[in-house]
Length: 289
Length: 156
Image (cartoon, chains in turn purple, cyan):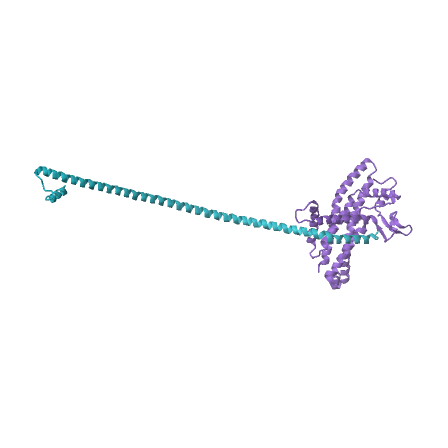
């Protein structure tokens, strides 16, 4: 499973960090990018098929499972699956109740979706790094593709598109509710009239603007950074394989230890994304802070 | 690693999933949880009520038992009183009955005594007359001397 002989370490890492990008290349026309350079050259009008596929698959899995349980929901003695679902919903609801003071029926489902979806996407990190890309490469080679130029990133949250996508939706909601709850004037006043009063308006706008813009940025970059770094370490550990026996054993041990530690990280990152979303929306709902 | 169309596609996917969750997943689960909560609260309240009713019932039972005991003691006392009364009555009856019997016997004895006395008196009178006849050796006109004979007989 390790870096094959024809790949240098650098190429191996590069291979793992390139998305399966579908788009129009200025020279090669419409199709999958054969290298990260080509993917970059496709510009904005390209789509990361792997990110889309895994994120939608996992999101669908989440909705399907929860929907199935919700349909057979009973107020009586719950079964195993219902217990599990109730445990998660209860946990999310408790967090919403603890941090969100206003009334909004959207915040609970939003928080649940974020928590479950981000957790599932992060969970893909625990699948051995080479497994799915290798199988996909072999599959594509059946259709005549060179497996070295077939890319697959299985963890959608290591793609900034996914994390920024979610963060921007949350940011959009923050702006929407800020305008709705405080009014245009109220929101403008919040951005310009504090903390220094009306004579410090430019400084206020600078500070508040930064704090406002930092919300989606920190949401997206925190999740992306954590998952990207985690994946990178898995890739680096995977580089140990294929050498001597000592390296193999060390690699196996390291991978196990990092995977166990990573269970904490993926859960924590999903939780942090959820809690920060709740808190940001709560701030958007409040008249003054 | 490039920001591209995936960003918007992800935003749409995210919004769709949130919408689905909000419409089909969250409400039934939260509703069932709220229902269960209400059910449990109801059950607890019912248990509390049951406890109180049990305590009340126990108290009521205690009062009933006390009353019943008092009533029983009362009845026993009355019965004992009645028993002594009956015994006393029986004793009085027996006493009066025996008095009656004694009186009757006494009367019989008196009657018999009187009869014996009368008989004796008549016998003595006849004997006296016979004796007088013998003594006087002559016939006495019983009619002429009836008063004499009677006074004699009375002196006996």
